[in-house]
Length: 295
Image 1 (cartoon, rainbow, N blue to C red):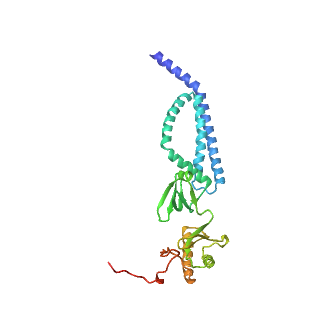
Image 2 (tube, one colour):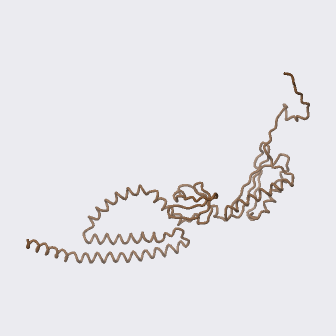
Image 3 (cartoon, one colour):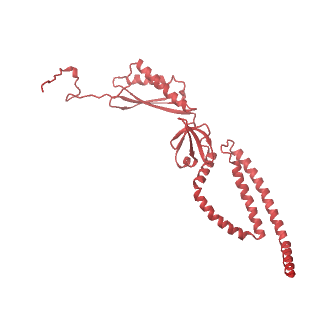
């Protein structure tokens, strides 16, 4: 027994002496790659902040950490190869790969939203405070995160829109130009002077505070309806919030209604004509009305 113990101890000492250089070399490589990874991380942060000064998601540290993990993992793999532990580690990674595939299917929507959040941060199609319409939800952007964009709608609800919806469909940013076009449609009666109608409408639009005169006004008669001459009025107003749009529409409607009354212009409503003759209509008061009371 003593001989066996002595032999085992001698083999252990011999193995230790053989592996000490490998262990030292592996530690040096790990430390070296850790230092390189730290340097790369700082460089990534500086480059990202210079390239994207308005960073909404604050993802520069996450990106830098990914590069740090990549370089540090490379150092670990080299150290394991030097120590002869790379094959057991490969088997471990193979087993972890199966788990990763399963987790990938389970988390694919989260991953898609995170990637879309990265694209939002890089492309900046909108920012906090912009008025947008995403997936039918119209409101002001309150927050942009990795997974969702938070919108406060006009009725006052907070809506969280998954970021992947932004790139799977279409969305509208109403704040991009700082202005918005209003389109009003109405109609006047057959008896009104159309040139006069046009002049009055254009004059009233120019009097509202929100109107942008450099954009001009469009006025078109669009149709001869069943009881009206239909027209369309288009003009631009400044747009900082939804109230600017609503006020720009409200003021023109009130002004046109009041001015039309002063100018004896009728905003027409549906009229039904009863034809009692073969050609054209016959006024009921032009002929006597006979009522047969016999049963």
